[in-house]
Figure (cartoon, rainbow, N blue to C red):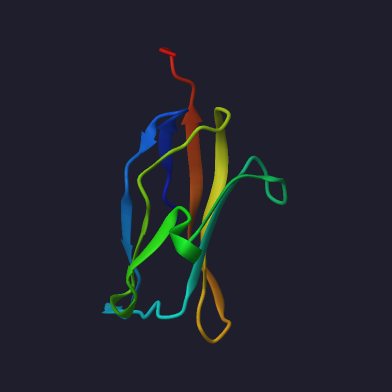
Length: 111
């Protein structure tokens, strides 16, 4: 699924919640690890890396019901239209990327 975001450099990014469903039923995130990175180009260096390990930018809020979120946080990286995706590693070792898109960071005027 393509989903685009935007934020102003140095501003607080508001929390975004997700529900992982399979055939309209919640899909378990028990013992899953979720990762998200912003890069300028495919294979390039990550400018922002988030993970659900120790709630480092991502949080699994209800594992049994497939709920997770991008945490509210200040994003202070260079202005650019980044590529991102959200990758989930399930307890059986299966890795799936269900969400990707562009993440536009715009310059602010007031400093």
